[in-house]
Structures are given as structure tokens and as C-alpha cells.
Amino acid sequence: MQLLVSDHTVMEIDALQVGERYFFSNVSVGISPQMMNDTTSADKKVLGRLAYVLQLFAVRLVKVWRLSHMWPGRVG
Image (cartoon, rainbow, N blue to C red; front, side, top):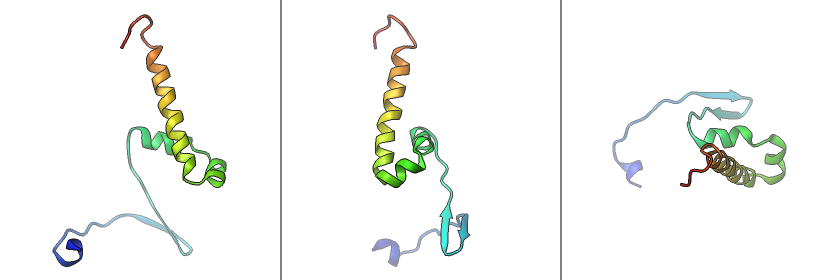
């Protein structure tokens, strides 16, 4: 409610309109873009948002596996 009644900063953002739909860009770093990039359209159609959650676990497992094999014989 505070946002509606008080002064606030207005920011312009870029959007792409195709027909009646609007598309916004998302710039991020880390696990999020990798997860979004690796989630297939087919998975999204079948699983919906769950596809991203499953991909998140897949990305995390791959990173853990890689780290555990980078330093043979080293614990931690």
C-alpha cells in the first residue's frame, strides 16, 4: 500500500511486443541463467514450472560432482 500512496522512483525498462504479448529481458548471473538455458521447451510444455525446479537440482548435482573430482585425494 505504501508504494501506491508515497513518492517512488519510476524506472523505464525495455520490452518487446509481438502481437498482444509483451516480452521482457532478464539479465542475471550464476545458477539461474544456466538453469533457464538448460531447461528444454519440451520439458516446460510437459512439466510447466516444475521443469525449472528439476533442472535446478540437475545443475547443482553436476557442480558438486565436478568439484569433488577437481582435487583428487583432498577432502572438503
